[in-house]
Length: 253
Image 1 (cartoon, rainbow, N blue to C red):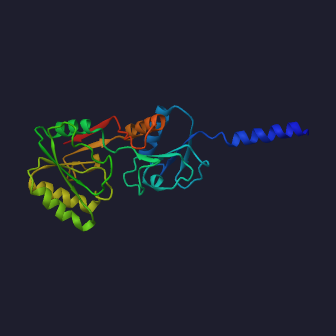
Image 2 (tube, helix red, strand yellow; image 1 turned 60 degrees about the horizontal axis):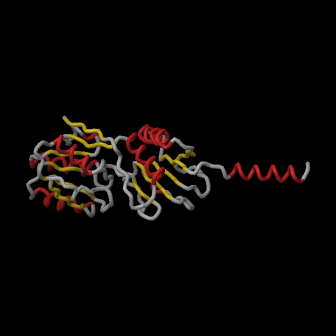
């Protein structure tokens, strides 16, 4: 074999090994929830994507990683220029720099419209949350006539205090954002009992909680979250940009 031909083969092999798509998608599991989001992402992104499951080896130094779910969202991705967290409200990472999270709620104006449809005449909306997270609640100051009464539950033992504080105010409804640290089975039972005892509607982050103590739910569909992740991958200019899912699903009794 000639040296020229050998050099050509080596160069070709090197080029092939570095030809991985610039976007790598990592799914926490093969749950239909993540699969729907991933499918919507692929359709909206339209470019080549390397797919991996959480725990599998990914291409070295990927330009963009889109992590679906909390396990994938909490993982480290050395060398990645940017990481997009999708459907990962419980991911234990510090946002900013090269990481952003697709919001688990629709844009503020859309959210308020949905809540008002659920609770006609809504004037004061109570909000419980455990995370001081950018984007989890950016509804104030959007020109809405709805007043927010926000309480942050700072520890497992702080829930009774936060509820007492909210109960002392003239609420029309109480909203729980998608917050795995707060919306546990035990906490939800306590919150639902407080809402029922004080006569106001409880709006949950999951349709599965409707009829089990919640009167309604404002839900971001996995398809809309996947599309928002594709928009982030295509248009990312500033890590401070917040990408909202466009579609919402409102379910009530």
